[in-house]
Image (cartoon, rainbow over all chains, first blue to last red; front, side, top):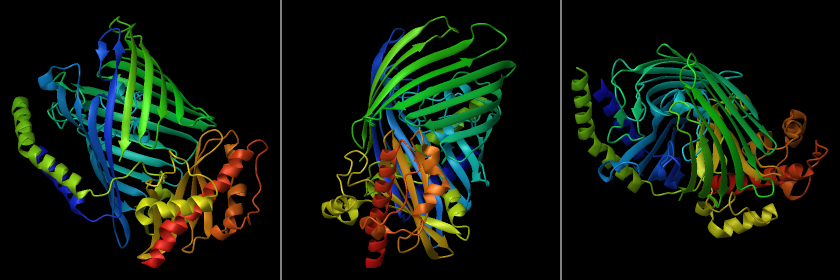
Length: 335
Length: 212
């Protein structure tokens, strides 16, 4: 099963790169990140970013009747400063999908992409320090599988069935992940959505695809969730929020995130960000929450380069070890 | 059993990883064009095409830069037509602009094109649907950073631009009125963005296609 799936995926990727296209974007990416943490001292990574080089190739394929296929391949060669030199280098496959148009307003997507839950599938957090709840909620922000995406008269919908394994392709203990999100179109200043999740999800550590990241357990965790999310653009402010509630096996869990982004009117290349997110691992017990507040600033130096800095305080009540961290980032995405 | 699956998957990865990397290497070689970040794409092109042109059966997307069509000479011409200096971050010569040809069967029946425009409080995205000669048939904001955004995005304001073409903007024949009390700067930015949109459509799409 896995072999057929992988061969099919590789064939599609190869076909897309050999075919003729009218819309083709090839981006190169360099990410340099570092900082200091009370807990880990000097660090060269954040929760989801490490020092890396990579690229993204986004293509649209068309015939005389219009676009029929879209592909995206986005990968990084990353260096994890917290690992020893033999294990520090890894390949991370982020986006690796093709979307076949079933008609105007309906796409079938195959590959590695965002589960259809919460803010993650509608935001681009690929290069940003501030992230959504996805990592704490699902355990990863991309997974391998299929999805149906489309639009109704007033709402957009996504349904995804994935392996429940995250960055690496694995199938253990009957793992799978079903997610669905229905929300307002992405063209409005005020957007909101409702999401559902059900699955048996593997818990892994690390963002790498090759070599396989580490499994924390061979047993999958049963996850059931309901969630709501919203974004509101008002003047120079962008408000973001999401809430997820449900169960991890028999434990009741709850997560919530609030964020305010402010673009300086006088210099719109500068953006200030403030985010608070909390994940309660067991509502029946005290001090099981993992909460973080982050303040950040980003400066778009030119079309391709963004500089970022972030100061965070991790309350880390679950392990009883608070942490303050400062991170700075140089991010290049372009020619 | 689980161990067997794990080992077989790892072996599978070893077998196919060389193919994957070869494919990726080939893709890098084949990709002869490199782009900066895309100017302004439709967030939901299927929805927009269906809403604006119910008779449409599909659309074709094309990314075009000023650099590849006419280089610095065309960039200077566009800057002159816009009437001020283009932004050094968001309006550079190598920004790939996304153009959508709306199709009915095999026939192109309209174009859709969007631009980013700097406003008083942040960025705005101005989307125009035009006929094949560049006359506006619809206009909407995909993004609007203004405390009076609802007034700008209201149909009573946007419909005032229907029927206008680039010539009207170049000759100053615009009768649309500012719908706000305190956002004159964003109104003027809208006019600049629409003019820039039509200039780019004319130079990168309509004129280029007619020359081919």
